[in-house]
Image (tube, rainbow, N blue to C red; front, side, top):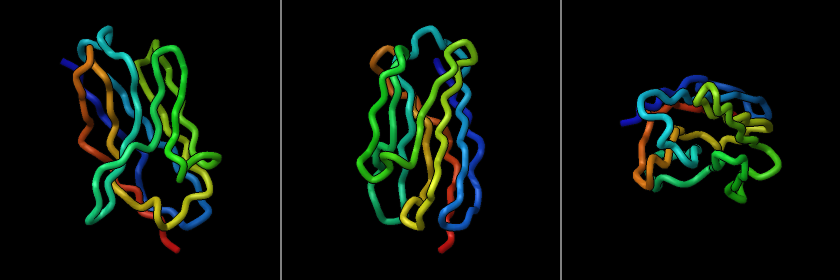
Length: 115
């Protein structure tokens, strides 16, 4: 099994920045892609960004040019640098890992952007 623990959420003004971190533990050798999803109130969970263990990335159109995902494989940690934040980025952000084609999720961290 893999456990994911997020940190770095909080309250920020529009235009500001936050950096989320997600540390994996357990059977980390089974992890393939890692990434971030988010869920705003009343909305479905959506992909924000994902990165493979080889460093290939994919972003939602709504966050391209503003968010950057990165990964430290020796530390089994994935990061999400969020710049130029907008009120519509307000959501609970969940860390995700593909563990031998099964999904693992963190507990979520709240990001609130005030306008």
